Image 1 (cartoon, rainbow, N blue to C red):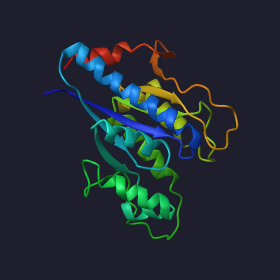
Image 2: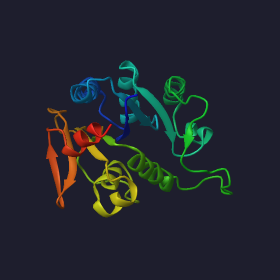
Image 3: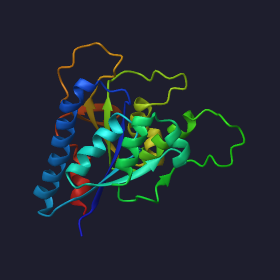
Length: 228
């Protein structure tokens, strides 16, 4: 049986709508390329798994491509489903519900943090999203990141760039998942007016204390597949 390659997803919620087609095309190319690499090395079909929180923007964009390619998608929510749905507007909620029914663990979603014992009616959800990011870094072989290469904008510092750091930071990485690497696809946020010209990818990984940005497959990924 083929070894599973687990792909976690992180990225911005407020992607520029006009960029969606280019971004989806690039995500599709990268997933197909990953399948081709696996097949070229082992002459067998890979089993790809995508983990998604199904938030608007990057999560849903990547999940839609995965569904199109018949890749198994599993829902990983930062906290309980009913609370999570409240954070979405009506249109987003309907889209979320539709996609959630298509995931492999429909009806038994994995929930990272338990909020049921909270006494306050309102509280800061930022720590739960941070825990979600740690979960993605810990349980993914590849972190697929739709990122604008800018620092976090939130006051607590949590967001896409922090999840990437969970993977790349050497000290943290040793305690999480030493095999994880980042597949970065440049992406604009809706607040960015800079013209969008390039959605081409880069692999990002740590090597000898330096961050490497490359279009070549990381040796660590090839070695992982060959150890099947």
